Amino acid sequence: MKRLMIVGAGGHGSVVADAAIKSGYEDVAFLDDGKATSCLGYPVVGKTADAEKYQDFDFFVAIGNAKIREKVSRLLLEKGLNLVNIIHPSAVVAKGVVLGKGVLLAAGAIVNPNARIEDGVIVNTQASIDHDDVVGAYAHVSVGAHLAGEVKVGAYTWVGIGAVISNGLSVCEDCMIGAGATVVKDITQKGTYIGTPAKRKA
Image 1: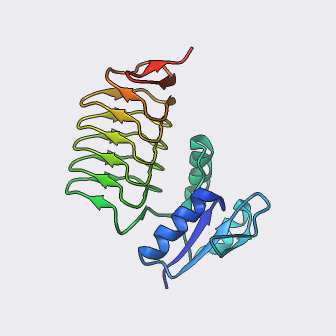
Image 2 (image 1 turned 30 degrees about the horizontal axis):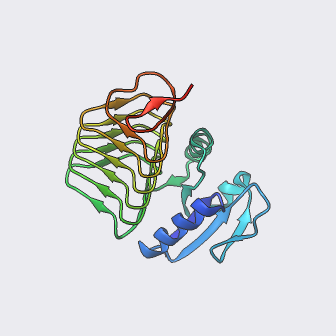
């Protein structure tokens, strides 16, 4: 039986649980350090600290905050637990794609040839990653966001809902690209960028 333990019983956790069941997991449960007792009808069976009790489960970290997602992921790996990728069956993964550990490809996500998606990345619903892109560790490409070919997105960067990054550009780590923004030149300074063309928010 394929069993999955999801750390984080919030809205993102419900998306992960649904994708997991659709991709072949037969048993899903959650760990959560808050007050939740269930998520999408699946039980919360303990706290993050209880992870080692579930050696017979695969693990996935469903926490939106990139730095916390990284911290928890590293903790699970240090404990020798099996951190997996969750790929919704409607996602498209082309030839030559390289995926790290703990990656989510949500419903309708598209990852085109020779892209590299590093550890802990979220490629959310109907987002697209084009050919030869590199998405850095623990970045989040939000719902309906699109990266053209040969784009590089730095670690921890959040590409907001509906945002677009033009061909061949680089965005440094720890950035926030606002909803609907259009990136038309390299971003080399950390910060929040909004509008069309995207400009750094003062």
